[in-house]
Image (cartoon, rainbow, N blue to C red; front, side, top):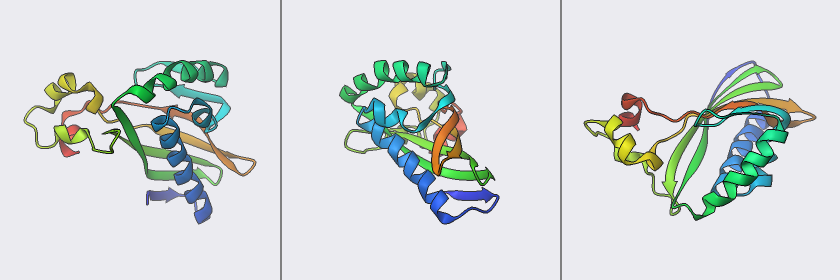
Length: 164
């Protein structure tokens, strides 16, 4: 269960956010663009892990439909876990995601960095093993939580990589 902070909210909101993150994971792992896009508000601002900024579903949709289907043939996918949720208001939450690369069989790839003398060097050798640390700003509209803004960042800090 994620760490919870901020204004008090019903447990059902926490559960709905955890479910939304699980839905993003399912869509990513199974290369389902429409399921992925269902998590976004129409006016979402999203920055990819490689720094590409996309605004609104008019930009996010074509990008997702072009990129996501091709990932189904990759040997690597990722798990997504809501690590912490900060409820800024009852209808706005900042959600810190732990994104870990795994094989299609569920074996973690980030483990290659554990206790390694030079995790930074391993990043170049194992780019698919680099975890992500997304931040989602979720908004509750008409009873449903959706991504209003998101920043997906690759973890490149050697200490963070070595800590797992």
